[in-house]
Image (cartoon, rainbow, N blue to C red):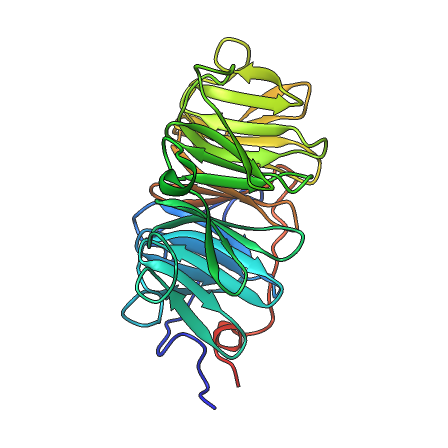
Length: 329
């Protein structure tokens, strides 16, 4: 049996950082992080941080950084759009299909070898039954051994099937965002919300998260909208400390605090009070936020990766080499 899972060669770089106990900044000058923006982040069972960029995939074990590209690995594209882990399997969405990494195998799925309607996979989520749901540029797709198109223009007659955001709520209802509105989907029943038929402030739906009470929080180009049992609430510059209404990404931590990434920095909301977070001298355009098991916030910007913890960064170190993670014996 071959020893490799999905790379043929790999690079290591080790760095020692003497930075602030609350903030660490990683970029192309002190790590292997490319200059292009960070699109997605996640952590696997071994506590490795997987970082998707538009110039390749990075795996960081707390000590070593490993940059994987189409030149030294089997990833189908350097443009990484999303990363999801389910048990021991990793799913990576790119602009050239989905890479599925299992313990002893790996495979890329695209429009030529599967029923995928598009090679552009922007989001992958997993429901309570282990089914994978994919937001593609030509429809909402369900994957469990095979790909099945669940929502697109041809099948359902929807206006826009170029999905850019995706989540699943506590009742297993799918919520999918486009640049022309928000869709809900459950049991083959779908509904669209836009600024013509609802209180949503803008049709550009860039991110969606669900809180512990099953309220949906929606990041738009014109503020944050929430919906719960058909009741809407809007947050923007008029009623919060937000300096902009352009909301790029939103995430909840384990304390039900909402972390809001905008084109002018980072803001938090604990359900009562909003607070501006000063993570750097200049206001950053925040593209992605990931919160690890130690409550560290991994903040992706165009130029750098910022790790932030208001209580002090608590690093996770994986004693296994990245070689052991990627290479299977």
